[in-house]
Amino acid sequence: MQKNMLVAVGSGGLSAVASMAFFTGSPGGLLFVYISMLPIFLVAFSFGYMAGIIACGAGLLVALGMGGVVNGASYGILHAFPAWLVSRHCLSSTLSEDGQPEWPPVGDVLGVVALASATIMVLAGVYIAGDINGLQATVSSHITEVFSLMGLGVENPEFANLRDALVTVFPAALGISWVVMTILNALLAQNLLVRFEKNLRPSPSYIDMSLPQWVAVPMIVAAAIALASDGDIRYLSQNLTIVLAAPFFFLGLTVAHWAVRQVPDFRIPLIIGFYMILLISGWALAIVAAIGMAEQWWGLKDRFKQDTQ
Image (cartoon, rainbow, N blue to C red; front, side, top):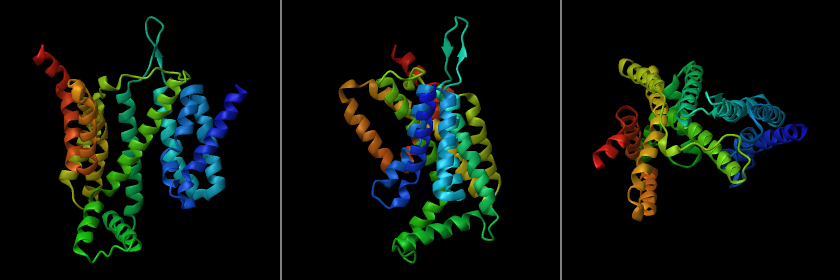
């Protein structure tokens, strides 16, 4: 037990150091930031939830010591908090009637992470909206400043159009990247532990994933507020709607992978082409999310199976 706790403390410290690698200016620093939650997930998914809490606390203390209150708070919100949240939900098993552990479905975890991201967005939006210029104007000002530092003159119509497009979805892009980064770190940790037979819970069947019905409620509420409002409230609500649709995007991905499995001879080219399209097309992302909604409410896979029988 003592050895496990020492490993947890060391993993938390490693996580904090990795989260600040970007400030070194090294080319690979950003990669370490993206995988900074991985050490915590490895500890939690192999030693248990309490070890994960210790790792999160150790990481927070190291971040505070290295970077002060601001960087410490950033680490806590962006790295320690999601690692704790996902670990708590993934490992909170119950016993079935025959005494076997029942683990929370992946869809439930996705919904919780998306809702947490939306909550952070609301809090940040309320804080930034206190600025004299308002939320959207503040975001636009910061992006313009970044463009100027990059030598991209916003007086150029092409760059001005790009800036305006980025401003429209910038909060949502940050929120979704936070969700994706969290989920990918958790999946990577679970896959590594399964390979070395150190995992506490079995890996779920991602292809059969479903979402709890409550996931749609906050998304619909945010969309309704966006339609009924204007100004910063509409801007924030539109971005919240996109973030809260993230679980449906992941569900749409499972439908796409299931469909590819139906044509095994072309599986690899289809998967490569599919993800290339996702990387270059925002519309493709929206279509996949819409497919996920259709799967959630109408059961596309089950309907297709019935039609082909």
